[in-house]
Image 1 (cartoon, one colour):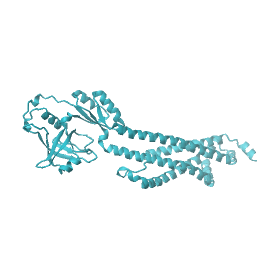
Image 2 (cartoon, rainbow, N blue to C red):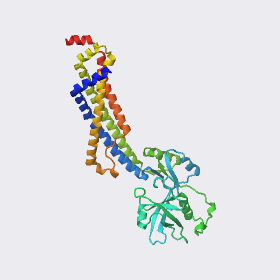
Image 3 (cartoon, rainbow, N blue to C red):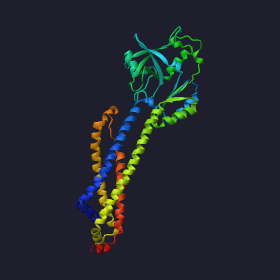
Image 4 (cartoon, one colour):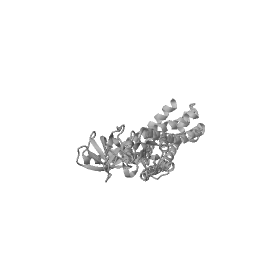
Length: 398
């Protein structure tokens, strides 16, 4: 198209105008891109560090209550819950742990677990006779995966202690659980509770005062994991209302981090709006003044039979080229600035996480917004071109 060709040739000839507008874009876009990238990088690193600890998504009921199977079963249909297991009474969840034929023995907290437990390695399962143990317990007893161990009760004065032979299915990393901890199926903890309640366990040589067949399984609490950190506070409130008990979770820490993210988004949003207003005003004045300088040329083109609508493409084409060049250079300079910032300040991030991150969808959204802003600024100049009266302009120029 003739008008596109003329606009491009004019832009190359009048390079100073092009360089000025690109410099304005770079001066505003690069600092914003760096701020946005650093905010993404630091916040993603903090969120990733928090997600790496499954306890941040855990909700536990406090105290001992009595829940029916119906009350527990209803929770399984809640979409926010990715894993749930009932718990036994708190005074029955400690056992001594000893390697088979080992001399050392350590007390450990026994927690209910099962398939899908976020505390376990991804995709890992526990066999009915297997347990997962914490790194601290494994180090103190010199245990590894596959080791045969015994869980021994702590009932002083009883004629016979309960001894459960189990196998170490997984040794959990330090970030997964702290202290001396054993994760086992709820059925194993229920068996331990039955022992402490003086039920007979003939399979283990335990003679109690009550028959096990008469025992009714009860749930004294639940251990729940939420799917997303954003749902932790809401799920905790809903659980307390449904079960009528108090719960414990790291809601305050999670909400503090999420609140920080919202505040950073707000501050960055306000900064972006102000920067966009400044960039838009500068570009409007720039394109408007450029059209004013070229009125005689544009009027001459109009006299050749070019319509006002086609003539309005003149500043729009130049604005599009300016925007594309400004975006390319801005992202290149952002990459350089991001590398420099990472070299200076990125060492403190966990696991070598990148300091500045802008994803492809975010980059495309930024490009789209900048193109709309620049073309919107050029539209004002295009409107003035459409209102141009070639005869009047040429007469005034003469």
